[in-house]
Length: 306
Ligand code: AMP
Image 1 (spheres, rainbow, N blue to C red):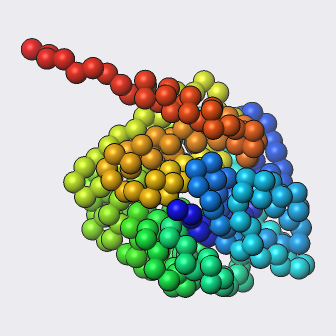
Image 2: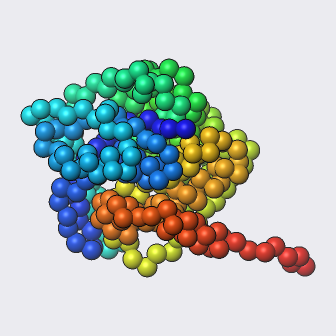
Image 3: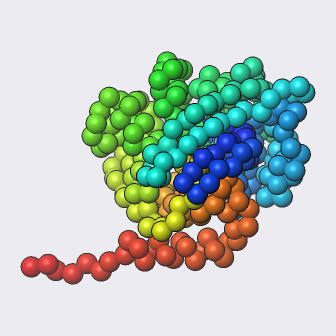
Protein backbone atom coordinates (compact mmCIF):
# COMPACT_ATOMS: atom_id res chain seq x y z
CA UNK A 1 0.00 0.00 0.00
CA UNK A 2 1.20 3.53 -0.62
CA UNK A 3 1.57 6.51 1.69
CA UNK A 4 0.61 10.16 1.34
CA UNK A 5 2.80 12.47 3.42
CA UNK A 6 2.37 16.16 4.16
CA UNK A 7 5.14 18.09 5.85
CA UNK A 8 8.03 20.46 5.38
CA UNK A 9 10.26 20.35 2.32
CA UNK A 10 13.16 22.51 3.33
CA UNK A 11 16.63 23.87 3.05
CA UNK A 12 18.60 23.38 6.25
CA UNK A 13 21.68 25.22 7.50
CA UNK A 14 23.50 22.80 9.76
CA UNK A 15 26.27 23.25 12.29
CA UNK A 16 27.51 20.04 13.94
CA UNK A 17 30.80 19.07 15.60
CA UNK A 18 31.65 17.51 12.21
CA UNK A 19 31.37 20.80 10.33
CA UNK A 20 28.96 23.24 8.78
CA UNK A 21 26.76 22.86 5.71
CA UNK A 22 24.36 25.40 4.21
CA UNK A 23 21.35 24.92 1.90
CA UNK A 24 21.16 21.20 2.55
CA UNK A 25 18.02 19.47 1.23
CA UNK A 26 15.93 18.67 4.31
CA UNK A 27 12.47 18.93 5.76
CA UNK A 28 10.34 16.41 7.59
CA UNK A 29 8.45 15.22 4.47
CA UNK A 30 11.67 14.89 2.50
CA UNK A 31 13.41 12.75 5.11
CA UNK A 32 10.29 10.67 5.72
CA UNK A 33 9.57 10.00 2.06
CA UNK A 34 13.16 9.11 1.17
CA UNK A 35 13.29 6.52 3.97
CA UNK A 36 9.81 5.14 3.24
CA UNK A 37 10.54 4.89 -0.50
CA UNK A 38 12.81 1.91 0.17
CA UNK A 39 9.71 -0.02 1.25
CA UNK A 40 6.66 1.35 -0.54
CA UNK A 41 5.43 4.03 -3.00
CA UNK A 42 5.19 7.53 -1.48
CA UNK A 43 3.35 10.69 -2.55
CA UNK A 44 4.39 14.04 -1.06
CA UNK A 45 2.21 17.08 -0.46
CA UNK A 46 4.13 20.24 0.31
CA UNK A 47 5.28 23.59 -1.01
CA UNK A 48 8.57 25.14 -2.07
CA UNK A 49 9.64 28.52 -3.45
CA UNK A 50 11.18 29.32 -6.82
CA UNK A 51 14.59 29.12 -5.10
CA UNK A 52 14.14 25.32 -4.88
CA UNK A 53 16.65 23.52 -7.05
CA UNK A 54 15.06 21.27 -9.65
CA UNK A 55 17.83 18.73 -9.08
CA UNK A 56 16.34 18.14 -5.61
CA UNK A 57 12.93 17.31 -7.07
CA UNK A 58 14.72 15.01 -9.51
CA UNK A 59 16.49 13.31 -6.60
CA UNK A 60 13.12 12.55 -4.95
CA UNK A 61 11.74 11.30 -8.27
CA UNK A 62 14.79 9.07 -8.68
CA UNK A 63 13.62 7.32 -5.50
CA UNK A 64 10.23 6.71 -7.13
CA UNK A 65 8.58 9.41 -4.99
CA UNK A 66 5.56 11.18 -6.52
CA UNK A 67 6.27 14.93 -6.24
CA UNK A 68 3.18 16.09 -8.14
CA UNK A 69 1.75 17.33 -4.82
CA UNK A 70 4.71 19.66 -4.20
CA UNK A 71 3.57 23.12 -5.23
CA UNK A 72 6.17 25.61 -6.49
CA UNK A 73 5.30 29.22 -5.59
CA UNK A 74 6.82 31.66 -8.06
CA UNK A 75 8.83 34.33 -6.24
CA UNK A 76 8.37 32.50 -2.92
CA UNK A 77 11.06 31.29 -0.54
CA UNK A 78 11.44 27.65 0.50
CA UNK A 79 11.05 26.83 4.24
CA UNK A 80 14.44 27.20 5.92
CA UNK A 81 15.65 25.78 9.23
CA UNK A 82 18.97 26.60 10.91
CA UNK A 83 20.17 24.34 13.69
CA UNK A 84 23.27 23.83 15.80
CA UNK A 85 24.42 20.67 17.56
CA UNK A 86 26.83 20.64 20.48
CA UNK A 87 29.63 18.28 21.50
CA UNK A 88 26.97 16.17 23.15
CA UNK A 89 25.30 15.48 19.81
CA UNK A 90 21.95 14.79 21.53
CA UNK A 91 21.74 18.46 22.35
CA UNK A 92 20.50 20.73 19.56
CA UNK A 93 19.29 24.26 19.31
CA UNK A 94 17.09 25.80 16.63
CA UNK A 95 18.76 29.08 15.67
CA UNK A 96 16.26 30.19 13.06
CA UNK A 97 13.06 29.06 11.31
CA UNK A 98 11.82 30.85 8.19
CA UNK A 99 8.38 29.55 7.21
CA UNK A 100 8.59 31.19 3.76
CA UNK A 101 5.97 29.67 1.44
CA UNK A 102 4.56 27.54 4.27
CA UNK A 103 3.15 30.68 5.94
CA UNK A 104 0.40 30.96 3.31
CA UNK A 105 0.19 27.35 2.14
CA UNK A 106 -3.33 26.01 1.64
CA UNK A 107 -2.97 22.34 0.68
CA UNK A 108 -5.44 21.04 -1.87
CA UNK A 109 -5.34 17.30 -2.47
CA UNK A 110 -5.89 15.77 -5.88
CA UNK A 111 -8.58 13.11 -6.09
CA UNK A 112 -5.94 10.40 -6.28
CA UNK A 113 -4.06 11.71 -3.23
CA UNK A 114 -7.27 11.97 -1.20
CA UNK A 115 -7.81 8.25 -1.73
CA UNK A 116 -4.43 7.07 -0.47
CA UNK A 117 -4.75 4.31 2.16
CA UNK A 118 -1.98 5.54 4.50
CA UNK A 119 -1.53 9.16 5.60
CA UNK A 120 1.49 10.51 7.46
CA UNK A 121 1.15 13.99 8.93
CA UNK A 122 4.82 14.87 9.22
CA UNK A 123 6.03 17.81 11.22
CA UNK A 124 4.35 21.03 10.08
CA UNK A 125 1.86 23.52 11.53
CA UNK A 126 -1.04 21.48 13.00
CA UNK A 127 -3.61 23.57 11.10
CA UNK A 128 -2.05 22.32 7.84
CA UNK A 129 -2.12 18.76 9.16
CA UNK A 130 -5.85 19.23 9.87
CA UNK A 131 -6.54 20.67 6.41
CA UNK A 132 -5.02 17.61 4.78
CA UNK A 133 -6.79 15.21 7.14
CA UNK A 134 -10.15 16.87 6.38
CA UNK A 135 -9.73 16.17 2.65
CA UNK A 136 -8.91 12.47 2.97
CA UNK A 137 -11.66 10.10 1.79
CA UNK A 138 -11.29 6.98 3.93
CA UNK A 139 -7.70 6.41 5.00
CA UNK A 140 -6.97 3.01 6.53
CA UNK A 141 -4.33 4.42 8.83
CA UNK A 142 -3.35 7.96 9.86
CA UNK A 143 -0.09 8.63 11.70
CA UNK A 144 1.46 11.89 12.87
CA UNK A 145 4.59 13.54 14.19
CA UNK A 146 5.04 16.94 15.82
CA UNK A 147 7.62 19.03 17.65
CA UNK A 148 8.13 21.28 20.66
CA UNK A 149 7.39 24.46 18.67
CA UNK A 150 3.77 23.40 18.02
CA UNK A 151 3.33 22.08 21.57
CA UNK A 152 4.34 25.56 22.76
CA UNK A 153 2.47 27.71 20.28
CA UNK A 154 -0.53 25.90 18.75
CA UNK A 155 -1.72 23.55 21.42
CA UNK A 156 -5.42 23.62 20.52
CA UNK A 157 -4.99 22.60 16.88
CA UNK A 158 -2.37 20.04 17.84
CA UNK A 159 -4.78 18.43 20.30
CA UNK A 160 -7.42 18.18 17.53
CA UNK A 161 -4.94 16.35 15.30
CA UNK A 162 -3.90 13.93 18.06
CA UNK A 163 -7.54 13.02 18.71
CA UNK A 164 -8.00 11.98 15.06
CA UNK A 165 -4.94 9.81 14.42
CA UNK A 166 -4.37 6.07 14.82
CA UNK A 167 -0.66 6.32 15.44
CA UNK A 168 1.70 8.96 16.80
CA UNK A 169 5.47 9.42 16.83
CA UNK A 170 6.95 11.73 19.46
CA UNK A 171 10.24 12.00 21.29
CA UNK A 172 10.47 11.52 25.05
CA UNK A 173 11.12 15.17 25.84
CA UNK A 174 8.13 16.27 23.74
CA UNK A 175 5.90 13.62 25.35
CA UNK A 176 6.76 15.07 28.77
CA UNK A 177 6.16 18.58 27.53
CA UNK A 178 2.84 17.68 25.92
CA UNK A 179 1.42 15.93 28.98
CA UNK A 180 3.20 17.64 31.86
CA UNK A 181 4.18 14.15 33.12
CA UNK A 182 7.86 13.50 33.75
CA UNK A 183 7.43 9.74 33.68
CA UNK A 184 7.41 8.58 30.04
CA UNK A 185 5.10 5.60 30.67
CA UNK A 186 2.56 7.83 32.41
CA UNK A 187 2.88 10.36 29.55
CA UNK A 188 2.37 7.57 26.99
CA UNK A 189 -0.83 6.38 28.68
CA UNK A 190 -2.18 9.91 28.77
CA UNK A 191 -1.47 10.52 25.06
CA UNK A 192 -3.10 7.20 24.13
CA UNK A 193 -6.20 8.11 26.14
CA UNK A 194 -6.64 11.05 23.72
CA UNK A 195 -6.88 8.83 20.61
CA UNK A 196 -3.78 7.10 19.14
CA UNK A 197 -3.92 3.30 19.48
CA UNK A 198 -0.24 2.99 18.70
CA UNK A 199 2.37 5.33 20.13
CA UNK A 200 6.08 5.37 19.41
CA UNK A 201 8.27 7.30 21.82
CA UNK A 202 11.65 8.04 20.24
CA UNK A 203 14.58 8.23 22.59
CA UNK A 204 17.35 9.43 20.27
CA UNK A 205 20.48 7.32 20.47
CA UNK A 206 18.83 5.12 23.13
CA UNK A 207 16.24 3.67 20.75
CA UNK A 208 12.46 3.72 20.85
CA UNK A 209 9.47 2.45 22.81
CA UNK A 210 6.42 1.07 21.05
CA UNK A 211 3.17 1.24 23.02
CA UNK A 212 0.04 -0.58 21.86
CA UNK A 213 -3.17 -0.99 23.85
CA UNK A 214 -1.86 -4.01 25.73
CA UNK A 215 1.91 -4.10 25.29
CA UNK A 216 5.21 -2.23 25.36
CA UNK A 217 8.20 -3.09 23.19
CA UNK A 218 11.65 -1.55 23.59
CA UNK A 219 14.03 -1.31 20.63
CA UNK A 220 17.65 -0.41 21.27
CA UNK A 221 19.55 2.27 19.40
CA UNK A 222 22.56 1.02 17.43
CA UNK A 223 25.72 2.05 19.30
CA UNK A 224 27.45 4.10 16.58
CA UNK A 225 30.92 5.47 17.13
CA UNK A 226 30.44 8.39 14.77
CA UNK A 227 27.30 10.48 14.46
CA UNK A 228 27.80 13.18 11.83
CA UNK A 229 24.40 14.86 11.60
CA UNK A 230 21.26 13.73 13.47
CA UNK A 231 18.96 16.08 11.52
CA UNK A 232 15.96 14.21 10.19
CA UNK A 233 16.63 11.05 12.22
CA UNK A 234 13.12 11.20 13.70
CA UNK A 235 11.46 11.61 10.30
CA UNK A 236 13.66 8.90 8.82
CA UNK A 237 12.68 6.60 11.67
CA UNK A 238 9.00 7.27 10.96
CA UNK A 239 9.63 6.67 7.23
CA UNK A 240 11.25 3.29 7.85
CA UNK A 241 8.53 2.33 10.35
CA UNK A 242 5.50 3.33 8.30
CA UNK A 243 7.10 2.33 5.01
CA UNK A 244 7.41 -1.21 6.31
CA UNK A 245 3.89 -1.27 7.79
CA UNK A 246 2.44 0.00 4.48
CA UNK A 247 4.47 -2.56 2.53
CA UNK A 248 2.99 -5.40 4.57
CA UNK A 249 -0.47 -3.79 4.90
CA UNK A 250 -0.66 -5.37 8.35
CA UNK A 251 -0.69 -3.87 11.85
CA UNK A 252 -0.26 -7.00 13.93
CA UNK A 253 1.99 -6.81 16.97
CA UNK A 254 4.76 -8.77 15.19
CA UNK A 255 4.71 -6.39 12.19
CA UNK A 256 4.76 -3.30 14.39
CA UNK A 257 7.76 -4.66 16.30
CA UNK A 258 9.65 -5.34 13.06
CA UNK A 259 8.63 -1.86 11.93
CA UNK A 260 10.30 -0.27 14.97
CA UNK A 261 13.50 -2.03 13.98
CA UNK A 262 13.11 -0.89 10.34
CA UNK A 263 12.74 2.67 11.63
CA UNK A 264 15.81 2.28 13.84
CA UNK A 265 17.84 0.81 10.96
CA UNK A 266 16.95 3.70 8.63
CA UNK A 267 17.66 6.32 11.34
CA UNK A 268 21.03 4.70 12.09
CA UNK A 269 22.05 5.24 8.46
CA UNK A 270 20.61 8.75 8.34
CA UNK A 271 22.91 10.11 11.06
CA UNK A 272 26.08 8.85 9.36
CA UNK A 273 26.32 11.80 6.96
CA UNK A 274 24.94 15.31 6.40
CA UNK A 275 21.39 15.80 5.13
CA UNK A 276 20.28 12.97 2.87
CA UNK A 277 23.77 12.04 1.69
CA UNK A 278 23.83 8.60 3.34
CA UNK A 279 20.37 7.60 2.12
CA UNK A 280 21.21 8.78 -1.40
CA UNK A 281 23.57 5.82 -1.92
CA UNK A 282 21.95 3.33 0.46
CA UNK A 283 21.04 -0.11 -0.89
CA UNK A 284 18.43 -2.63 0.23
CA UNK A 285 21.28 -5.11 0.85
CA UNK A 286 22.78 -2.71 3.40
CA UNK A 287 19.36 -2.28 5.04
CA UNK A 288 18.94 -6.05 5.26
CA UNK A 289 22.39 -6.51 6.75
CA UNK A 290 21.82 -3.89 9.43
CA UNK A 291 18.42 -5.40 10.24
CA UNK A 292 20.38 -8.56 11.09
CA UNK A 293 22.80 -6.57 13.26
CA UNK A 294 19.84 -5.17 15.21
CA UNK A 295 18.47 -8.67 15.71
CA UNK A 296 21.80 -9.74 17.15
CA UNK A 297 22.02 -6.60 19.33
CA UNK A 298 18.91 -7.37 21.33
CA UNK A 299 18.92 -11.17 21.14
CA UNK A 300 19.62 -13.39 24.11
CA UNK A 301 18.67 -16.86 25.10
CA UNK A 302 16.57 -17.16 28.19
CA UNK A 303 17.69 -19.80 30.70
CA UNK A 304 16.52 -20.67 34.21
CA UNK A 305 18.26 -18.23 36.55
CA UNK A 306 17.77 -20.09 39.83
P1 AMP B 1 14.19 15.93 13.05
O1 AMP B 1 15.68 16.02 13.21
O2 AMP B 1 13.69 14.56 12.75
O3 AMP B 1 13.46 16.60 14.17
O4 AMP B 1 13.82 16.78 11.74
C1 AMP B 1 14.56 17.86 11.29
C2 AMP B 1 13.91 18.38 10.02
O5 AMP B 1 12.70 19.04 10.37
C3 AMP B 1 14.79 19.39 9.30
O6 AMP B 1 15.14 18.92 8.03
C4 AMP B 1 13.95 20.67 9.26
O7 AMP B 1 13.92 21.25 7.97
C5 AMP B 1 12.57 20.25 9.68
N1 AMP B 1 11.98 21.21 10.60
C6 AMP B 1 12.59 21.92 11.59
N2 AMP B 1 11.72 22.74 12.21
C7 AMP B 1 10.52 22.55 11.59
C8 AMP B 1 9.20 23.11 11.77
N3 AMP B 1 8.95 24.06 12.68
N4 AMP B 1 8.21 22.66 10.97
C9 AMP B 1 8.45 21.72 10.05
N5 AMP B 1 9.66 21.17 9.82
C10 AMP B 1 10.68 21.56 10.59
